[in-house]
Structure formats: C-alpha cells, structure tokens
Image (spheres, rainbow, N blue to C red):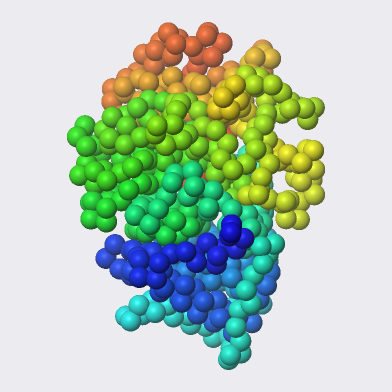
Length: 500
C-alpha cells in the first residue's frame, strides 16, 4: 500500500540497516531513526506543540536536522530555515509562518533567537555521547503527553518559494504530498536497500529533503550527510561510504569538474548515476560529467510546489536526452497558452502540472492562487515545449524572457552557447533596457581561462542569430545565486544594467 505520511515512508527500512551516516559523527540505523523521531515528537508535544503548529528549524545538515524535520512534521508542521539568514530575514519568515517554536543547536543561531516571536518556544537540540537526541528548553513541560499521529491531509512542511522574481510565497505541503513524492523519486531511479545517497544539498530545501533523504528512506537505503558540501572532501567521503548516487544543482557539479584534472575519482567507482535538478544543466556540463566521472547523468525537473520532482530523464537503457528534463514521473505535464488552453506537442507555452505531489493552494495568498491554478492545472511559471515522446525542454522562466522588439529570447539558450567556450566557467544572460528595442541582450560570465569580451561575443555570433547575440558582455568574479545554487538573473541585471 502506498504511503500517505512520512512515518509510513520510514516503515520498510530494516531495523539494523544504516539509515543516516554523518562522516566522523552520528550513525543511526532504521530502528534508531524511528525511535529517535518518536521520542523527539513526544518531547515537542510535551512543550505544548501540536497539530498545525509551525516549528522553525535552524540547523546545519546533520542527523539532528533530519530527525527533527520528521519529528516536527509528526507533531506539528516542520519549517526549516537557512541558518545564513540575517535577523530581519528570520523575523520575516518566522512571522510569515506564525512560528510557535524555534529549534537551534546549543549556543548557535543567535540571529534566529533574536528574531523569535515573544510567544514562541526556544528549543536547543543535539546528540549526546550516547547517541541520543536531547532537547533542552526553558518552557514548561507536560509530562506524559504524546504526539498524535498525523493524517495524510495534515500540513507536514512549509517552505517559501525562492523569491528571485517576487515576494516569497508560502508553500504548505501535506503529508500525502511528501509521501507520494518520496516513493515516486525512489521508483524513478529504482532505489534499493543497497543504495547509498551522498546528500550535498541543504536540508532546508525541498531538493535535499525529498530527493536525497526521503526517497532514500523510502527504499531502505542509506543517506550520508556531511555538514556541508566541500569539493575537496567530496570524493573521499564517496569512496569511504560507497556512494551509489548523488543529486545536486549544476553549480555543485561545476565545482567538482573544476577540481578534476581529467581522471575518474576513486569515489566515483560505485556510482550508478548522477542526478541534476533545481536549475538548468547545460549539455556541455552533462557531457563533461559523464566523461570524467563515468556515470550517466540524469537531469530532472522539480519545484517546491510539487514536493520536488515532476520529470526526469530515465536510467539506462532508457533514452537520456541532453537539453531536456525528461518525461513526467508520476504526475501529468502539459503546456498551456496564455488563454489557458493546452497546446499540442512541439508548441511552446507555460508548463503546467497535475498530480498527488502538487499543493492544493498557497497559504494566505488568494491573488497568487487565482493566477497559478487553471482548470485543475498548476501553472509553474516556466516556459517549455513537450516533444511527441513526452520529453520536456525548458526554455526559461516567463518573467526572465528577454523581449527584444517583440522577439522573445530565452536566456538559457545564450547561457548554453557561452558555456561551450573552453574559457567560460559560468554564464548568465539577461535583458538590458534599450530605447528602441525595449530590451537588448546582455550577459555576464565567470572565466576559468583567458578570453576577452570581443572574443566571446564573436564566439556567440558564430552560433546564434544576430538578434540573440549579446551586445555587451561583463566579465565578473562571481554570479549571484540563491542558497540552493539557482542563478539570480534579476540580481545580476540590477547590479550590471547601466539604466539601474
């Protein structure tokens, strides 16, 4: 029977098998994990927390963050937040979710503590020397109180959209949304008890929580959780723990490539596949990953509002198509015009989705809901094309399209061309205001070799129609990104556009 809650996702892991491994730290079997989650949930309940209460989690990637995510989702609603936020950011997010509690490591999270609402409970959490998770709080406890088991319709997790183009929207994900997503991802990649996932994505984001962690638990496999991604230690950990796959954003893949001298790392020896999601992967980066690391690269398509994965390229011997995000996995995918009509294959429009992992609505945002749902379909805000085989190619975000005199230009197409130049490590194209055309194409690049602006523009001109060629190209030290590695085109444009 399909799971409808996160607790049910955990039920098939064999008691003695390893569930979580922290290099140099805590290791939990499935028996340990289930017991620790149940105990932590009861302790949160004893602090007066219950169904529907948002519990903010400001924790590094760790066994604590996973156990407390599951415990918070059991007793109330988990709300993981980025520990790098400033005080004002914490204040906004905790007020927006209505946080009833904040969980931090002992002596850490000062900015979050200062932003804690006056009526919320502060909790410190860490594992003791005996490997038991200890929750400390100055709030009164109701001894003997236990967490009530959630139903599939209860809100398990709240996250905010990345907010790169507008005010972040609050996304409430139900137990049934997340349970379906975990099993769906495990099914897509045929995960088993033998698989070991190396988790390098932050656990305050849907990618790390669902793809790396919950999908692995659904299969009874092992999640290896370093405190953070480090390109210098990545392959050593992968080799020591026998990693069979990892999932990451293109930024992480590119960092691994930049440190690689062409040889296959020892830690890549057991990889069944490499997964890429949450941002566009260029065909050139995919080619280099497969050539140097010796494993098939599967680009996938996910978003918070769909509990992460919506589409993926299949495992071999399935047809992997560079430049696409694959076919729908467990949910329906369509392409819709501005009038709300589904369009035929090969026609461009807005990507729309339906399925068990998709949210019912944003929280407290009727305007966003009226714009985002049409005839039972959720509008993703992404521009794309489905081919006759159901493979989806993403063109770009609708709000990021460059409009040059009525010609709509997808920034990603320009990014991909610039990335083909051997001296270009990163590239981002965007629109710059123009008195005649409305917008003109501009790009910024980070170099990994020697190249001039003139040379790079000439390179692009050989491969792009004239109206798509950047008229100005900035060579920069770094490109702004979100905490999860997404390119912030708007931030780049705001910084570099002369009209700003």
